Length: 393
Image (cartoon, rainbow, N blue to C red; front, side):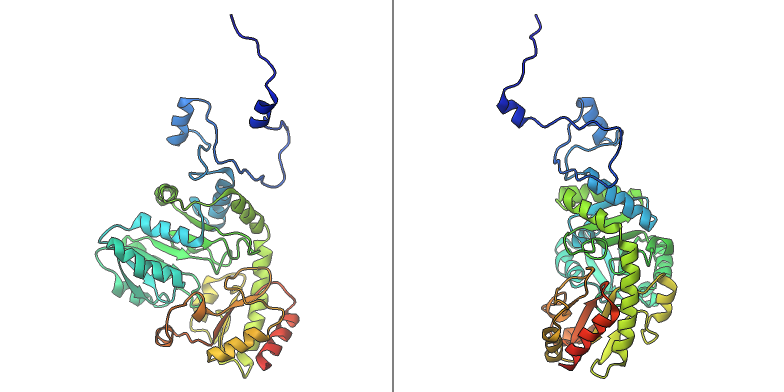
């Protein structure tokens, strides 16, 4: 005889998840879905989800709605087939290396890449028997000279950190494609103003922590590219616990909504600041792709559309002068990151390239007097007035 349903005890009502709210309308903005676990209907449904025959999620480390929305939007922006969201930009970079490279393989890394990327390739990958060489991303001939039979990946930055050198992606992509080797491009400094896949790149990486998030309140990485490479990268990222979480994925989606206007304004401010720095007697060197004095100005003018980016680097010659400027700036924070709506600055020798002596820095064209500026959305005259006070201090 069937048992009649009874009203659950209060403890049971408290413990059980509420039923989804019924609605014939949908939210205007994405909802935050913090659930770690998703409930399949039955065992057949588990099989279908696991085999990719049904859309949906099981466990958040393998995928969740907010990461899926962000990955799809980033893939569309970059003209890619698919994407994966990682816990940081370095998580995305590491996932690329560890998916595509095996013991005995060789990677070609552009000179002057971000310090942690270089450290990963030079200090960590050799532990797994993965070899490397460096090449000049602005000189395609150096790529051809560095290719080896076991080269399995070429890695560059659209705009390098902190010297803002610009990669000749069109030519590098052609040479890589002819050799049958994927070209991965870290596009962190150039979202929207460069679409590397249109220039022949295979994979595109972003530290969404920076311009995409835009508010210094999240840490995420994005990788987009062909589905045949993204799918195994998703598996590796999940296995190593490198995937991004729901709340920060949601924050990145919010940041994306204003990325276009932020990049336009920040690029305009950065170009004007760079022009003024270049003329100032207390600035030894100014690095900005939009200056005609920049060594890759011609490449940048062809590659970057709608602006030359938000990053400006200046060289004051010595650590003492750099420290004096940092102390003298009252409204511009010393904050070793980038991409915020407000202007910030950092000191590469003690942050991104920490641990390298003066000789090692000089070999890369850097000095202890170098300051990297992430230009924000402020009124340009306010910014310049503050820098003038700092330079004259």
